[in-house]
Image 1 (cartoon, rainbow, N blue to C red):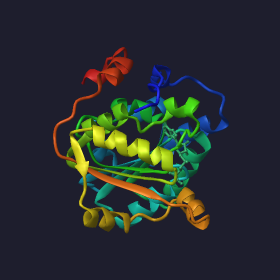
Image 2 (cartoon, protein in one colour):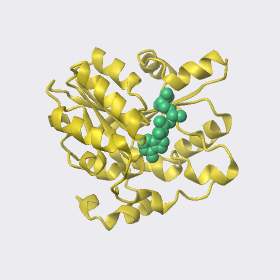
Image 3 (spheres, helix red, strand yellow):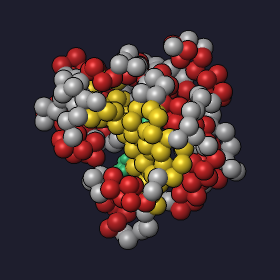
Length: 250
Ligand SMILES: C[S@@+](CC[C@H](N)C(=O)[O-])C[C@H]1O[C@@H](n2cnc3c(N)ncnc32)[C@H](O)[C@@H]1O
């Protein structure tokens, strides 16, 4: 792995900001179960399935859910699953929450927040499946440290997965694809899923906005499907980055 370590500053708690969508997100979250923002995304750790009215039995978590299209389409077809989607950008996250509310969906919630803080949002073993579509590649060497899918992050995802839980990833970026594969292979608590099982799942996932762009340009798309086969602990570095906030320990 040649990238530098993911900066600890990126685990910091949320601060008041002036983004106009911050307030809209807060208002929507008062009226609807399809939206939560910032610190409020950390109030349901360990009890997410109870926020949905459709009595779901499984939890899918999408990282970088953008306008919410993919999770919304999947949620329409699968009421037994609760779909959570986290997005850093306020406007995109709001659009997703608003669309889900307008559609009256009961098994989906969009979270405006930072996925670096996932152990504050989700309990150990709470998630059935992570979906990560076209994560920002941070292609220049000097930017590599910002790559989310670093080995610690993958270990953290495994820690948050149930036994046999799954991780599905797609990227168009060749260098990031190599880096992601190394991160996945380094993590011994997960292994590559049989091709057939992976394909069965990918057939159910509609093409995301970024995937449509890359397909129009005929760019190659790299996909990864791994499942949890052994216990995983929270990486020490992430534990220490968040432990000051104590909630992490529960
Ligand atoms: C390249 S876009 C892909 C969007 C969408 N998944 C798609 O395939 O069309 C990556 C998305 O991840 C979001 N993102 C990046 N880092 C994040 C983080 N730490 N927490 C939450 N979202 C993040 C970005 O804001 C952006 O919307």
